[in-house]
Amino acid sequence: MRLFPTLLLYKAKVIPNWKAKEQVLTYFFEGESLEKFQAICDNYGTNRIPEIVRPKALQRLKEHIQKGEKVYLVSASAENWLFAWCQSLDIELIGTKLEIKDGKVTGKLEGPNCYGKEKVNRIKTLLALEDFQEIHGYGDSRGDHDMLAIAHRKNYRLF
Image 1 (cartoon, rainbow, N blue to C red):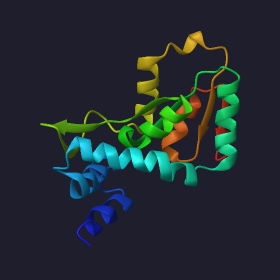
Image 2 (tube, helix red, strand yellow):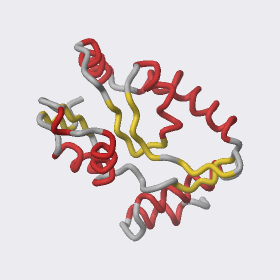
Image 3 (cartoon, one colour):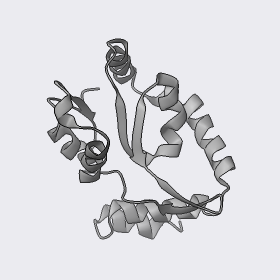
């Protein structure tokens, strides 16, 4: 109930997604030690993500990996949640970074939320897109449209 006003304001587009995200993260995780938080996240990445990822999406990821292609997961989610899963598949991760102070999660974001145009900014910071003959992009939310615009092969809500 305490977060209801935040969620309502976000849904009504009164506050941006990063602000709502910070308020939710602060409520649930502020003051949590990074060690404990990361253990929870690793457990989630190891046990829960494999249960909820769409089988056809996973199959497509594995096809790219088997071809020796470089695969990046670009997500607005906190990198902590996705790290173990990405590591298990040997894929690179670009996501939202959480602020850590004195070994504790603050609930704030460290830098911009990896959403919309920020996804493209992060990709371009790490990669020279002109070095790639073909870029496949996959997305399933409005926050992916900017990223898909830089892909040669765009796949929106394919799975």
